[in-house]
Length: 256
Image 1: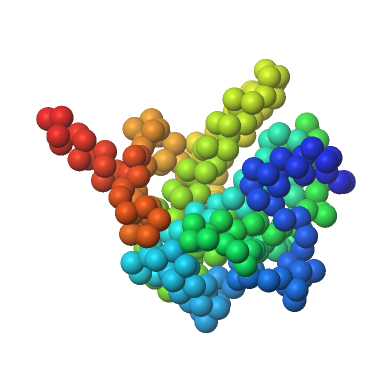
Image 2: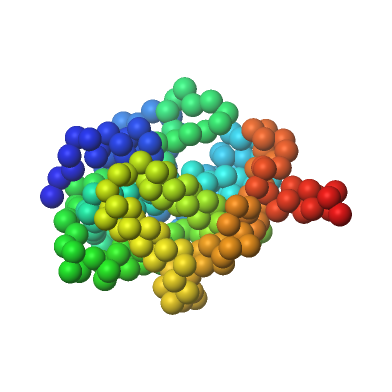
């Protein structure tokens, strides 16, 4: 099954999709780029983290790892959008994703997401729930969890921080999607997909068999982060974000 032109356009403009395969372009790309499979091996992983540290002016490699996961987060938004908005599912035994940085990239570092979408299939209504669970586990348990374990073997950073970095973008994407669709049936379906991903405590997304997103979806963390993403330790944002728990604690103390 192929994508419609308007579907591809949305993924390219909103999530910076480059739909070519990494194997197709890796020998000809200009600029700094790497497949996410590099995060599974110590030497290439540490090269990636040091490059990000230098590029973003981070205080250390732990901060660089948090900024990396923020950029990786956009890779998850592409299959989720295809599933929830267009009823299409990315399939395959492995998920070959790469970050492609153009030569003229500035210090903000906004890479494109290289992802081959030649293998997608239609989602049938009577199998939607089971296919949704399979997609979630395929992305997070089979791929993100090992990438994250690799990163954390090289740096000292909270596992919760990295999962929340992804959660923030997932929440933003689904909120945006809900605000843009007019069909009530589609709104309901999108809402169900979101809650199935972030609110189901029985959904196994990591290698411990738990759903790390579940804690962030609870009411007390609805608007603010539970962890600090460490962006204030980069040259990009020398202050805490508005939703940072550090900022929130300071505001609460000043109002007492």
